[in-house]
Amino acid sequence: MTVLVTGAAGFIGYHVCKALLARGESVVGIDSLNSYYAVSLKKDRLAQLEPESGFQFHHVDIADEPAMRSLFQTHRFRRVVHLAAQAGVRYSIDHPMDYAHSNLVGHLVMLEMCRSVDGFEHLVYASSSSVYGGNTSLPFSLSDRTDNPVSLYAATKRSNELMSFTYSHLYGIPATGLRFFTVYGPWGRPDMAVFLFTQAILNSKPIKVFNNGDMKRDFTFIDDIVAGVVAILDGPPAATAGAPHALYNIGNNRSEPLLKFIAVLEQAIGREAVKTMEPMQPGDVKETYADIEDIRRDFGYEPSTPIEVGLPKFVAWYRGYYGV
Image 1: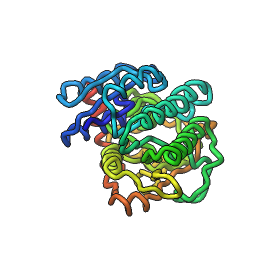
Image 2 (image 1 turned 180 degrees about the vertical axis):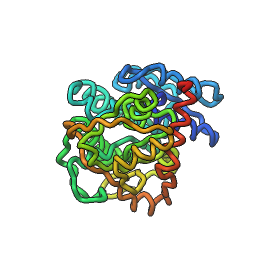
Image 3 (image 1 turned 45 degrees about the horizontal axis):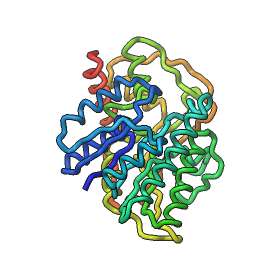
Image 4 (image 1 turned 60 degrees about the vertical axis):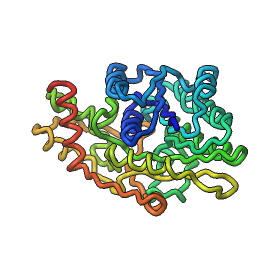
């Protein structure tokens, strides 16, 4: 049975497609290939997927309802991994309509498409640790409040969770939302810290260290994320609280100081960074830390990649991809 992966040319989407294909699934990937970051990187990810016999790609915007309806009528997808979204916390400050288009309208279109399929089995969709807002209770737990987002991006991701629960309640659509915590690794996004820092250090340029370095993040290596996504796809939720809908944190279950992260990256690169200390950015949070007890209990999820292992893998990919 064919799996639909939205955002297939994106960082996580690409790796999820690779994992599904490796275990013999047929995969249809879609992506709008927008210009939020270099389209060339997205096309190069697709170039790794397209030779696979079980893979098809369609250049489609998830908010284009007629195009999505045509695709669903052709394939009648029963399983969907929905990762397409307008990403970025800081970008949402100046480009709010992009988030309304992709993250609100696009997510609603996806829910409508899933409800159009008889016997639909499971929608796995991307949420974010950003939904916890300025929460200071650590680690972030599924029982924590999520009604005080500090960025529009976070607000759209929490809206996705609420919309999905509603459709699960009304129409019985099995759906699982995954609150991702700072994902990094080979083929990663150019707007993320590990990419920006590596690029700057290798080019002898300063890196911006926000909140004067007094920040922590639950950095999660891409292989650990993908293992969780695929396991959850195979395990749709039972109906609880009137709906077959579930939420999980998916992170590394440890919070690393930003300055330690930079030190490990410097060691992997073999060069010291020139640091420019900056204040906290609007919409940012000081610390993230995932409580993963629920996903560990239900799926045996156990992240196994510390930054001391994951960062050298990213640096090796970066050097190879850019010929550094």
